[in-house]
Each structure stands twice: as structure tokens, then as C-alpha cells.
Length: 570
Image (cartoon, rainbow, N blue to C red; front, side, top):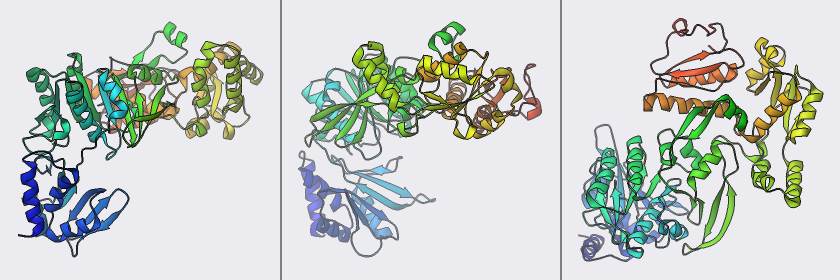
């Protein structure tokens, strides 16, 4: 046997006696490779090695932090793959294997017959100090949800938090380790998790059952979960939180906005549902009658977006942030910059964007300007300095361009001045971000209204041609009625209704009134999900109702006597 293989056997024996140095742990993975590949990898260096890729019929490749190189000579053969498979543990149903008491992961690619035709050998390292930047959240007993793109370090930070909670704070920690990524392969967990206990999951689809079993059988103070990805796992996490157990977990998604748009995982932040307000409440809020609200307290108290190895965005009060975003108000996160040892070097306030919201450069009507969102607290406090900042922000903010059609231009300009709205009156549809008209004109779809709907330009419908009506519409646009692109907002509301009907068993959900163009878009979305939808009511309050069951044929869709079968959105 070669020297490399002998070194590998010695390394495994050393692993069984205690924790190895980082370089020796990497050598265990290198030693499992074909001899020619292992020799080439050692020559190239292993300090910043991330993974080795072996694909049948292709040259082997080694991926480093900043480069990818071909290692070894010739193509990968079936014997090479068999060599690696025989050097690691048995592959599970998730096509993953490892080396006992290490954090390395070997993932397989199979052909249609189930034979392995590719391997990804990923180096696992325990990085001390990776969680120092959010240690304060864990010490306070808060449940923490980690988000971030693949490879950014979510599992590494999760492992370090488990170590801190178990060893430094002396809490009873149980790790639900689905793919052995947190505590490594084998029956004995890696020393990187400290005194925390590890429960392995026999099959990935049983993770939610093991989560509940951990709480019922082992009395933990903290439960650590990696990759919450299904509705059952989200429900199990809520059950654990309701029993007073601290949760540390990760989920699919990069930002809070991703989570809010995910019907399956939004339950982790309290769940989002469409609520119909009474006339008085809608008038008090200055919004439409159907709004999005948080359904329950969030499962997690805080959310951390891992942007890079040296920067995280912390939402310390998750419930307040979600509520503010749903109502179109300003929200901020703590942007923490971390040093080489993981300690916080600087903290900045960073604005949080709602789902579907555009960047400030393009945030003209129908969106709220970024300057206005960040100015809300100053307006409430009052004072000369605040008024000066507000005036400066108004001067620099992008203008919302409104085309009046059938309404008084003079009254609209007066309403803009009295409400201090970031709007300007324009004379053509090509310049407009929105069209303001009266109900009779909108019913006839005359002039530029038909063209506006075809282009997706929002149409604001007034009951009367009065300054008061115009002021109410401008305030609604400013204070939350137009915080997102109308098409995005309509689709998001339709997606929430689809999730409510298909996943929660509701018979029907009524959406907010929309223009014919947006109703048509909503119809198409509902149809793609195999559900039924009909339009009801009269303009400008015509709206969709989403119902269970497949969408019927056009001639069978009109069960409502008030529905108009000749409407163009049908």
C-alpha cells in the first residue's frame, strides 16, 4: 500500500483517540482520494482547499477559495470512484457519506441505474469565532434563524453557536443533525460541538419527527436544527418554540424578504395572511380593505442574514420588522462588520426592503421613495431640525408623475401641495407613473385608460372630483397603499391566497379589487396552481375570489349572478 494510504490509516487511528489538528483532518479526506489525485492535491496545497470534484470521464478538479485547478493526470475512471466509495462511510438516502469524527462530506451523483458517476468531496473545517458577532443574541436566550446563500457559512456558525451554548453557557443543547453536517459522520460527534448532544436523522423526510422527539425525550434547553425546508418542519419548530425551548436554526433563503414571499416557510416569521378590514378601519389606516398581516407570533425572536464571512445583518426584533414591512413603514437592521477573530468592529443601521420593492433609483410611483421611508421617525418627533431634514429629503426625492384624466388639474395640484406629496402632474401617458380618473370614465375605459391597463400603469379611481378625494388617494399612496409595484403586490396577494386554499384547507379567499389587467394576471397565476378563480363585483371594486378545485370551463365559471361574463379579464 502507498505511503499516502498508510498515512490515511494512521490518521483514522488518531481520530479515534481524540480531536486532530485541522491539517490532519484535511489529510484524512485527501487520503481517501485515488493516489495520483491525492498526490497532486498535496502538491497544490490544502490550506484553502474547499472541495475536490470527481466526474466520470473528466479530469479531477480541486476548488479553492479563489481558483479552480485540474489535479492529477488523465480522466476519472470507475475504479477511481470505487476507491473513494470504499474509503468513506456508507451513503445514505440523501446520497451523502463522510469520514467518522470529521466534518468532511462526500456527495454522490448517480445515473438512472443508481450507479455513482460523480463525487463531490467537500472539506469540513471547524472555524472558531465564527459566531462571536451574534453571541449576544444567544446569551439572551433568543431563538435565532440564520439565512444566507449556500457556502456562506450558515452551518459553520450554527455549529459554533451550539458549542458556545453548551460549553460557555452550560445549557442543555440537542442538535438534530439530518445529514451529519453539523457534528460529522459516525456515531461519535465531532469535538467542534462541545458538550452538545447530537441526534441523527435516519431519513431526511423524518427530520420533523426527530425534532419533536428531541424535546419530548431529552429535555433540552436549546434545540439546533439545520435547513428547515418543509411545512412539517416549520410546524415542528413552532411546536418546540411554544414549549419554551430556545431554537437555533437555518432555512432556505438569503434575506427576510425571501422568507416573507415563501408560503411554506413564512410560518417561521409568524405567517402572512390576507385580512379584510372594515370600512372604518380601512379609512383610518388610509389603505384598501384587503391587507396583508402577520397571523401569529414568529417562531424565532431574531433573524440573521449572513451576507459574507465578515458581515451580518441582524433583525433583533423580528415581529416589529415584519409588521412594519407589511404596513409599508420604514424598518432597519443592524449591519455588523466582523474582524478576523469574529468580533464586532462596527455597527451600522441599514434600511430593510419589503418583498417586491424596487431600488431607490427606480422607486418612483407607485412606490414610496426611500428618502420618505427613512424620514418617518423624524416627522413624528417634530422640531426644527427634523423639519429641515424633511424639506431637504423632499427636495431630493424622486417625483411620482400623475396624469389626470377627467379630474381637475388645478385641484390635483392643490391636493399635492396640501399633502406635501412627492408627486407632479404630467400631460401624457408616456410620462406618467399613474393615472387619476373618476369612476364613470374608468367604467367606459375611454381615452388613455385602456392603454394604461395594457401597459400596466396603475389607475387611481376617485368617487368625486374633489380636493378631499384627491388628498385621501395621495396619502394612501404615500403611507402604504403603494409601497410595492402594483403587479408584484397583486401577485403576492394571489400567492398568499393560493397557499391559504391549497395548504390550509380554506374553501375560498377574496382578493382586493384590481384593474382588469392585474385581475387577468392573477387569473393566470391561480390557473397554473390548479385552482379555480372568478371575478365578482362591479368596477372599480371588481375583484377575484380564489377557490379550491380545478378552474372550470369559461361557460361554467359564472355561478355568481352579479358577475359579468363579458368582462375582458375573463
